[in-house]
Image 1 (spheres, rainbow, N blue to C red):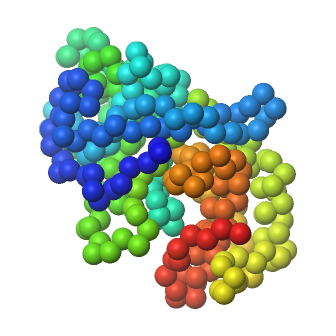
Image 2: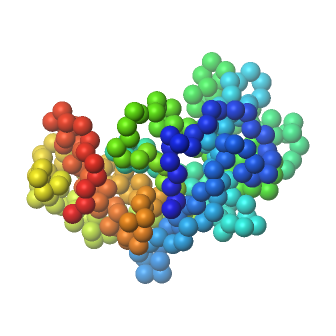
Image 3: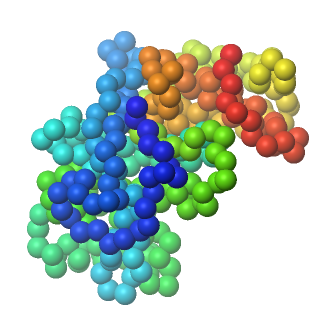
Length: 286
């Protein structure tokens, strides 16, 4: 599966310098599910492709900037089909955490170290990042066409440290906490195709007319008037999460749009539960 347990796998942050891929105790072998648009215009899942996850890597910036912590997914072009035009798509499970991100795989830096430091300083300055205002450092670095910290042969997709990795380990994890990984050559095109498809439009229409009934049979809820204003935003969240691929073996072979529909309905249902002062529920399927 293209997923990894969170609480069993995370290690303390530590400085990491470039070396053989997967060579540190922070590394975990993963796979990322390919998602693509078919010749008929349908967004579909493909095969799982190998990569390596490095958890909570501390990277050091030039001058007096504070270090940044990020997650890095690396791919070796010699053994993985992942290429520099691809993007990593990553989401947390349980899905109601609503955390997802995508990041382009970038080539490593092979030039002079001083020039690399100059380019990092330049892009930080251009984005208004300063020692006293470091919050946007990772956003600024994402605008570079190369990864400024990798000097080997690997492609690197970097993301901010996910929220669940910073949470205390729960005494009991009802739904096993995980990250799910996908890889896509055109994230925006896939999102647009899924939003424009007949089923997405129909689900939004049923939400607007309050005809959807959601939840397990014993606790059904009809879509409320209040949730209608959130429907488009919730649909986009479901689409972004679905591009990371299915989290469970039982869902292997499920079409992308079916996963979108399942996530959309669960998000609507949990949104209404929160409005009623109830906690998110275990995911259900029609």
